Length: 450
Image 1 (spheres, one colour):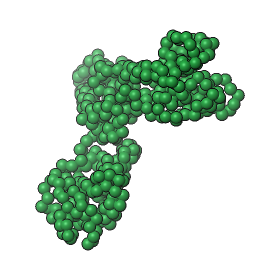
Image 2 (cartoon, one colour):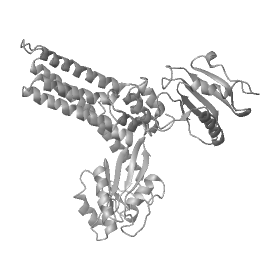
Image 3 (spheres, helix red, strand yellow):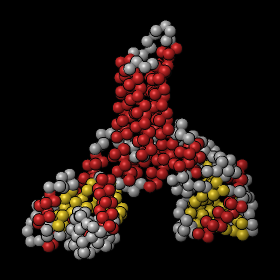
Image 4 (spheres, helix red, strand yellow):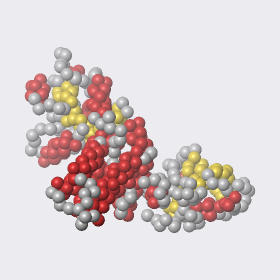
């Protein structure tokens, strides 16, 4: 990342053929740089007097390169600290197109403006106190959100729900830590500032609240990343046909030859407002073929990672259906090749060839996915970030240690250390104690221009 003293720029919209492109500039020299190439005079470059421009205003004008006009633009000026980054910011709205963007970017670079790295604007907003780390991460989640649920979860975090709750938990820990350490100051007088049973109740309550929040990640991950749906079954039961039908494209190779699919294929699918990570696995069977055996091993890996396992049975093979029913408990079983039989089978039966009952299968998948999300429907706050879950569990671990020390009467000094470590873990969530390497890793995953 650049230093806070440098002035940076990046496209804030997609580059290419479009009606408008936006270039964002941030840093102490933003106004000076833009004034050297921006003018309201259509005929020649007459640098704008920046001191005359009011904060948070929009101005129509032209970008010049020497005596040559590059484009007709609109410049939005945001003066520090009243901007996204907390610095002086200019957003230049140009006509869309590769040439215009390259020309304006070249001019900015010549004037000393440096290309921004991924997430650098958001990082500066965090470092300048415009938002905490959890809120900054929510920006990236919001940009990547593919469904309404994911968008709402990101907006809630961006609004500060998670940060405020973490701060409340941290405040409670500070109160108990203060009482424990105050008792150390009066150790010689034998003053009991906080009884052990009161301290234990407080630690237990906070631990439970943190643990409940950590458990909400099971739902949050599905909201953010989608439901892992693995389609499994023996070779040639029609797994790839169902996979292709759900995607409405011939993504997987379909053949009557068993073992055609040797490795899993993964694609994104949105049904009923739910994101599914759809996985077509290799047919599961005993085999001496080394390649197919590896495919079967990978299939089992995907089964273990799946939130929903869709097991496909072949209606044209009655013997296998009866045999497989005994080992399919807990899975969603679908009987395929309905078009090849003349009787009415039990359970969910479909034809991936004709599409018969495939709508029912889709509805059942959405219903089961919604059930997974609804497990925490009575929880007001759901975390969607694995980093947050890890830190919450770490905080719980320190509090469990503190509880053991209280029960063993090990001394307030040791108890205080464990409570402080629990506080530090919570503080990392909102970026109060996060180190530089972690910050750089987080923001490097953002898109450029945000």
